[in-house]
Length: 241
Image (cartoon, rainbow, N blue to C red; front, side):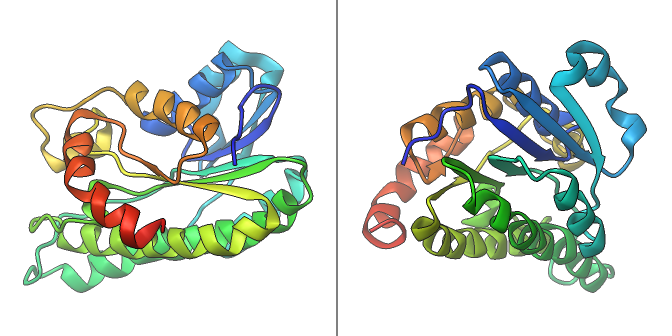
């Protein structure tokens, strides 16, 4: 499948900053008709509204809360591509005092949030002539990073769920893209202590290209592409075979 952004209606969770904001900008640059800015705080999108006017519509979503997602879906019945970008990161190794709380928080947002978004919007996407679902995963989904063990575990789980979505969405005509960034210059990247990181545009531009090419995986940045080189054989033989 191939999905072009031009003239499409998109919804992006966590659209107010970082990678999410860059995706908004790239989608509009490539001709998106409308973008729903799905955020917890509707006041946080004022600058995007000032810049893009009626091309953007702010709606409230907390991916950690199923009811807020269901309510948002009722307001966005014309969506053709959903980008589930919102996520959280905690610093917790396997023996950290906060390991259980961190894991519960990250699973609620990064894994259950993905499932909630997919369930709420799949009936809408199914009705469209062309549709796509994009999940922001991470290189941490295929390699544990010890100081971020709980985050890595949550992203491994979300990647597994994304593979399942690929299979169940295919007969519905919904293209699925799993995005696996490495170090990216964002607030989350700063929290993780990345000294060198690629730009958010490497991710947003990569998503546009990968959707057009009908790809399932996207490893958008310099570090991620190193992972891709090592992972490609396994992926071809096992994941996308």
